[in-house]
Image (cartoon, rainbow, N blue to C red; front, side, top):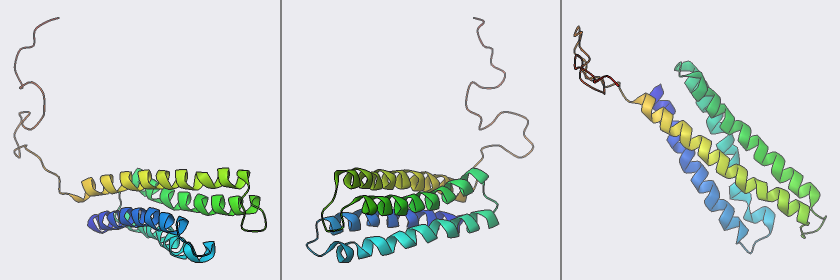
Length: 160
């Protein structure tokens, strides 16, 4: 289950990177905004659903609570994306022109996108570390400090 979670986390990273690409593609498109940003909007729904599935998988796999919460945070930040876009649209004029307030609020959409990328990257890094088998240098039943970094056991330390 942990490997499934790590795979979903990697897929989430790829989806967020693709989302930035689709946003730039829509911004520089000559098509009307609704049409130009349709792929960006569609992938946004996937980016919302993916961390919801990840939370379920993480809970079933009994992964650390912080990791479950961070996966949920990604979904929450996607909801904030939708709120930012709706607020910016409400602040704009009725036509195709934008107001300064609408543009300033919509700039937060990109900043929040970076936050999503940062949290998703952190989730992916932690998930990958948890999906690997534990590596120990200790011999079973050995009473020494094999595999523990630092000075060798039993060596005298100079007094300060």
